[in-house]
Image 1 (cartoon, one colour):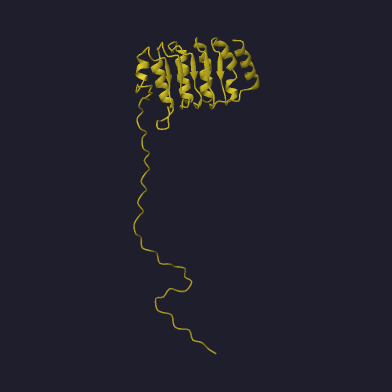
Image 2 (spheres, one colour):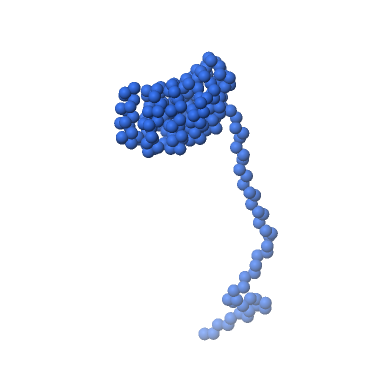
Length: 210
């Protein structure tokens, strides 16, 4: 049997030529707009309320004798203090002869805030602190390394609390020497800190003798 193939149409492309008609260009894709990062809000001084007083920090700066304690309460509806805020509080405390208690527990003091506090203690213009409470303040090795040697400038400090922070036990290797230099210190609270055993034992013996 013979089968006849139909004749090729004129102008048809040869089979298997591999040529494909290009799609018409619709224009270049527009360049993507660069992402803009919003600028952080301007820093504003923190506000610390006490009793019926909306903000005691101006009174502390003015050395009001009625303010002998500065206790920063951490509340859910209020922003937590940041290192810059801690530096500002240190500025307010400079030269104040009345404040004997400073409690910043739960605030984000951090290493920068701890260094600002150490600078205040070394300045000779720190308030006569008897109790310094910095529990859960995100202080790391750098911050505690700056803070501990500054304790020798606290001639009336009785209680130091540094529990639940971020520094390692190794960063407290000179803790006993620093406590020795602060001769008035009677209590050191470091709960949540994995102190080397020899440091813990030496510190306990030292404080037991006072």
